[in-house]
Image (tube, one colour):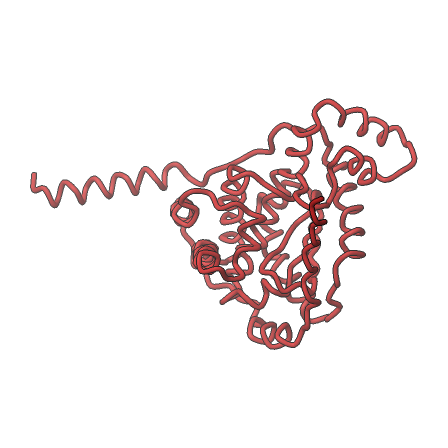
Length: 288
């Protein structure tokens, strides 16, 4: 057989095998929390976030992110999770977004200013939603506090006074720096990337735009730019962009290109938002 023809047939076989395997599916791992406790923890944590960050009240911006969010929430995996996702914009210049257990998500104005198209925004939002769907935050908390956590959760279920977040903060599971609820492993990041690509595709957004945006952030971070914040909170798995592009090939073929039609107006509105300056790093006490 002609060598060129042999290679071509091999490529056809590998492509057929890739599609036959279908999308990569993940399931939530070990967890001491119930799904109701995820939602309670997320509700209490969201109240704390609203006190600590500047919530953007602009009706258009909030309507816009909710329209994008609704497309993602309509996906099979988001619906199966049963979590009531919500979406709010916060005035913060860093390129970032985060979702709390149970579904509350906060999108930084810095992210809205950084994305090149609506699909890239949907990619980051889908990634964050996937952390919630796969219950990564409470999974990590369960593993970190395997001994003390059952008693704290049992007392909460028994109706004892005090918030769940307050009890967990005493165990070191809060929303402070390096919180296990929001700092994920590279494995969790990979799972959120691939599951997020599913949410995007079902919502009509090209999953490859997630890979393109993460590549952009990697390049910015490498040049000392402002992509560093997202990557510091979301450690970069090996071959991240390639893995997302491969997963996109596993998904059922469909035509992408959904747009709300409001992306350019969003860009104009968010450009007028003035974010508060980032907090100054605390000075270390001089050594004696």
